[in-house]
Image (cartoon, rainbow, N blue to C red):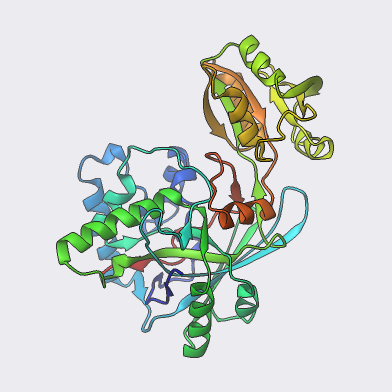
Length: 395
């Protein structure tokens, strides 16, 4: 099972956390980054989001900036290794109050296919070396992956508060962090996470980058005992009471609408659904169906035909692959009904989209236990973890 270890974290010395933390790099637009950069000269995006407009030396500049912040006391390293409890309180898309509690620590980087740290979905290829270049330049893990522990009772170990570090409220989500350095409690948390597999919920690419970086450090040092053997991870328990999992919908191009509908009709009965709104998602759950969304905002219910998917895993994304893989359709992915509607209205290359339902926590665990993979972008875990609450140094 994967090691999970405490570390001496880098943290902002100021309690003005709201000015210096940021959402994950991969959900930020250029305008978002501009606004965060203006918010504070020490906002973490100045390091975490090197921008092409800043030229070929942007990663080295980011690394220099991080070291300058440490030298100036903007960032301070903990005196001793510990874990950071991270709580997120929010109201989910259904109006339900939720709290997620997890722990930030160093999770072992294992070889692909070795088990212990498990992907839950196929990963779409990325040619960019952005995160690897940043890791090399900063010698730090700037943002965590999100792992789901398959060991029971992790939540019970995290209920007791630790030493308060700070609180940030963003977009209706309250993020609270607390430090734990008590040796007995640290050992108990480490041992429990170590007792079973960890499933990657978010951050598959970052974990792959950590593996590449680890291999580079091993080659350069001849050692497998450096800080690169672990990577920054937020680990929470895989329990439905905490997790809020939303769907990432399918966007189709390179196929005309008639051919798309013909392929879908093999497995679904089609019925007009009227204009698509956020309420459509709840109606899909009630009906047990998917929804085809056309460029004009009109929807069509896709109700599975009896027996059509008897030999196919009961996942909306798998059903769509089963019907469309042999067609000319290309697929991309978009979260959010409003965002999806805007995309279809503004992009002439899009034929149509299909709204799918969220994957349940039980199916996520079953997939992991059976060593299976879901289609790419099957899950969208919310809320997103903030970057800058904890930085893990690699030297």
